[in-house]
Every structure is written in C-alpha cells, then in structure tokens.
Image (cartoon, rainbow, N blue to C red; front, top):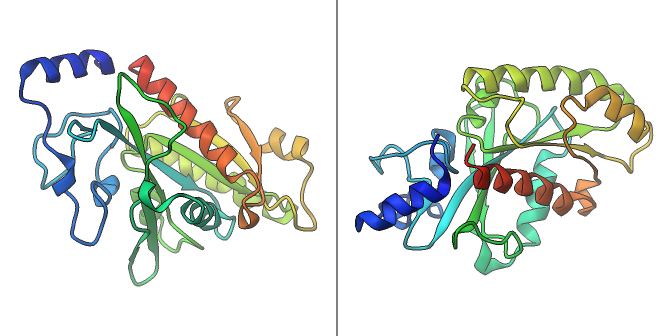
Length: 248
C-alpha cells in the first residue's frame, strides 16, 4: 500500500487530480454518503468510476472521507450514539441523517466534518458514521455495513444479562471483517461500555476483562444522555488518522 503522502504528490503533480465527490451522491444524500456500504472511503483503494464508488480523496474540498461503523448487540445504544453526535454537531458541519429501510432492517448513517481532528497534509477528514439500529434479523445486514470500514466502535451493553450477546456479537464482527478482507487485529477499534447508568451492570474492570481483545481503548458511556459519546468518537477517529498517516 502506498503512503498517503506519496499518493497526494503523484495526483497533484499529474495536473489531473481526482474526480470531484460533490456530484457523486444521490439527490437525497450528502456527497459521498451512499457509497459507504460498497467501498472503503478512507485510503484503501483507488476508484475510477464514480457511478460505482467514490474516490477516497475529495481534492476540490481538500477532504479525506473515512467510514466508521458502530457495531454491537441489539438495543445496546448504537443508534443513541449516532443520534447524539448528529444532534450536537453544527448544521454547517454535517449532512442529512439518512435511514435506508428494508422489510426487516434499516441502515442509519450521516457524514460530518469535525473541526478538532486536525489535517493530514492539508486535507481535512470527513467522517461517515454508520450503524444498523435495533435488533438485526438478518446477518447479511451486519455483514454489509462493515464493507469498506475504516474504523469500528463496538457498543457493548453493560448489563450482566447481555454479556453473552456481547461476546457473540464480537465473534460475529470478527468473522464478517475477515469475509471483507479486513484484519480485526489491525483495524482501528474502540470498545465502548454503554448503559453505565442502568441497574445490574457489570463492573468496568470485569466487563473489560471479558470483552477487551487486543488492548483497544475502552470508554464508558451513557449514550442516551451523551456521556462518553464524543470521547468514544475522538478515540476511534484518532486511531483512524494515525493509521492514515502511517500509510498502512
């Protein structure tokens, strides 16, 4: 894989640049949103046809697009995370919240441009946040949402009675990443221990011992009230940017 700096140099010096992302989205979405389900947004591949996918760099806007997936057991707080971030992000920083529904499941996503992430070689980072809300009836929905992910937040339910569901979903996550040729061992990943305010939660130390797999950052959260939500987002964004600067 080429380093990001090398790719920027080659494209800028060619005088051609990359195709503009701004016209690639559907009329109902913000630029580059719908492609997150079918391609990596951040740095994984070079794409040539806008109809199929969108370039990972928006040169006119000087933006890098990264896909972050919120994954976890049903009703664990994935949607609450996205809704809190969306509702507490400035209007001029974000696109629309989009919900794609099927007969049994739906996908929720939006994009926004954080002001505090800094830049990579003069490029700002636009984050595209995805989740499959509620209880997922078809594993195909979970699998599809992970395609092209640049980072993952696992939203764990802290209740003792949900421990098995957490463990099962983590195994499910690892299997689906592998099927997309994504390495769980290296992908930016954060474990969020959610619902810390409800009765019957396991102690942080005990839950971390059960669910932490590779020394990933662990955050505590009460997503419905915003506690720990942006802290979690900053952690996974930091890891994604570090991977991007490293060039994989």
